Length: 319
Image (cartoon, rainbow, N blue to C red; front, side, top):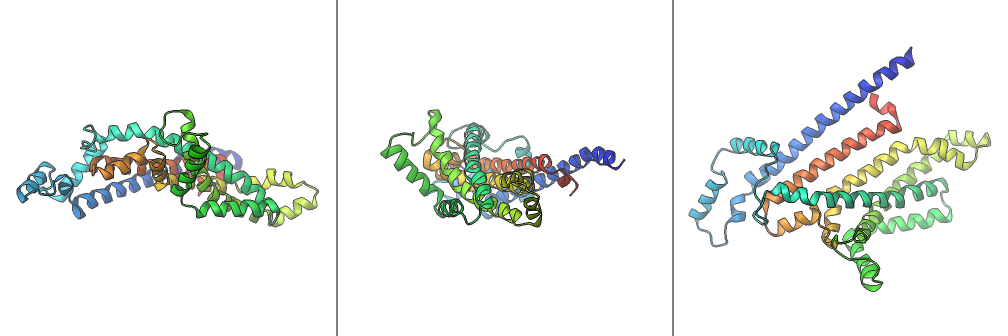
């Protein structure tokens, strides 16, 4: 009876968890767009961005009227929210088209780069981390730990430049910039994989080492179970949520700024390169759209990570 009740309530708990996460995501996104609005319209002055250096007071006043900056702040704020609901972020002064169109055009390139980069980071961090944690203080653990610390100590943009010099310029094996062929993604994805893989390795190694030190592992060994069997049947299951959290958090960190620098170094045509170009050209509307869309994608990624936990440990739905 208890088992039936728990099974029946599991979908209900999952729905409530999903609704809570959606509510929290909407609140966070609202805070993001509110901060952007007040930074631009209250702390800053968008009219001065478009005004020439020698603009007169009359010219600046005309720009204020043109952008509606002469109206009350709350009126502008609710109009701003209404525009965002309709995906109206304004007109790009640089590309002479809706800002959202420029961001949507660049979005797939960033998604592809971050997904491939995350796969490289997971391959470089999870498997070596588990092996190193299970065989602590062995030669492999010491060598891989040194490599991960080195990867964490190197700035990602500098590492990207080193990879360009080695594999693109000296050896001539791979393209160094753009997205003109399939091989173009290798160097930027490898850069993301090395930097983020180092952090994943450290945390996965620590989680695995902690599990291997627990009493149930000692009991399993006393029963004659092999190290591989203990690792596969018990340790990996208990560290699954921790590993998923680490990998998911590294993906969010990519969107938090790491991919922006990498796209700029490799001239990868994604949101990062678009954002930096828009900042250089003082295209406020594209910059605003890119930041908000990136923030929404981070929130959406966190929601997917929370849902993924259910396939690892269904007890989380009840928390």
